[in-house]
Length: 142
Image (cartoon, rainbow, N blue to C red; front, side, top):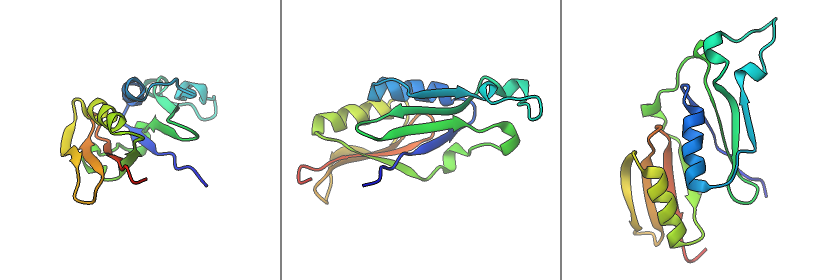
């Protein structure tokens, strides 16, 4: 079965955001590359872009990764208020769901507090402090 690995973009604060995600999920970064690592004389990156993240990956569970990068200014900016895609996490227990929900939503905006839902799952939704939207759920029947 294939694994889905969300790839999220930031406006220069990818390293800060991923350090926050690492504090919630645990683990160690598998990859951290900066634009300076890819710069060459024929296609140089501007000085203000060199220390931004070109690629970062954090293993999440078995075979899944949360990945991301900063968007170079020459490619525009990410509109954090219109980032309507959500990352859905299925927890293995109610306690894990609470830990992930409370950790990731800290400093963010809650859309739906975590609790028992009409469809039988323990579920909640929020936008984190970096504008990324998340859904956390646990279902005993799975």
